[in-house]
Picture: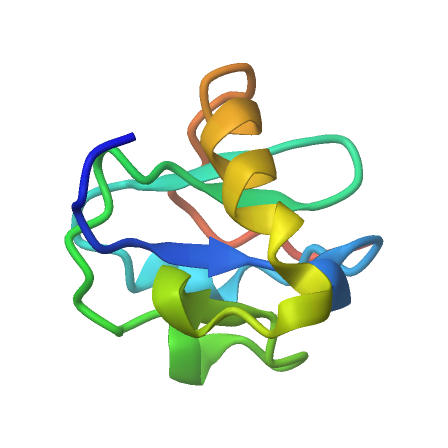
Length: 93
């Protein structure tokens, strides 16, 4: 894996899928999975815009992910390659 810094979505997003963070991403790094969102580390530019938009505080810089959620660094990298881009806020019905 490259040394690019990227943001990582962690456990609090599971089952939540608020999409406010998606709308502020200038490079469309967010991906939508069935249970949660992911950030593509290849396209993330480490701009920090998404962090304050996450109502469940699930987004961290990859080097600051809490120890219990470290495995989400790899999960985001893997799942971002398998899930579609999401670039607009979606509201639950």
